[in-house]
Length: 227
Image (cartoon, rainbow, N blue to C red; front, side, top):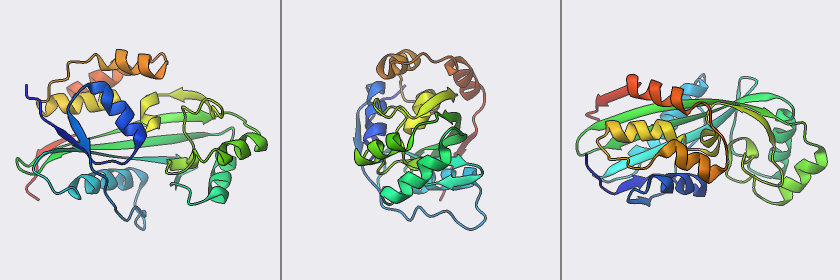
């Protein structure tokens, strides 16, 4: 299996933090795209399209990893709040309710036409935090540049009551799904990713065996792309 520098098409410090666990050579290139949802575009189509477009925006012959994460509450996509008031409204809307977090991954190499894609879904239940909890969190400015206006890992706010699925996915990079894509692309992954993820995030994960089994058995979208 080969090992080469991977271009991470993201400015997210959370994705950089998580990708570092792979112990692979990489560099980051941020992209600037119109991230508005198209009319009648489903959440899955929307997040998949953005992940792919982020990768295509990086002009290189190297292997490019791109990702996009969205929050879906009551059937509506909640993007990144533009200001304090939008963040306040999103957090109030999600309070005590379940929502879905979807992350789409795209691994692409223009020089060979390789394109691998996957998508990860996590169900999240928010706790019944108070208005004062919301205000304290907003004052921290941590909500900025985050889908749904929150970070699951924030130790003071700790907004989430329960997670069904991949915890790292809610942070923006489902590591087991990505490990499978990298292996399919011929990239040597020598780190025990489930163990590294749980140790780094200080969590216990019960879903990684099912995720790894599904990813290794089924290639959701693996093709040679001539575009």
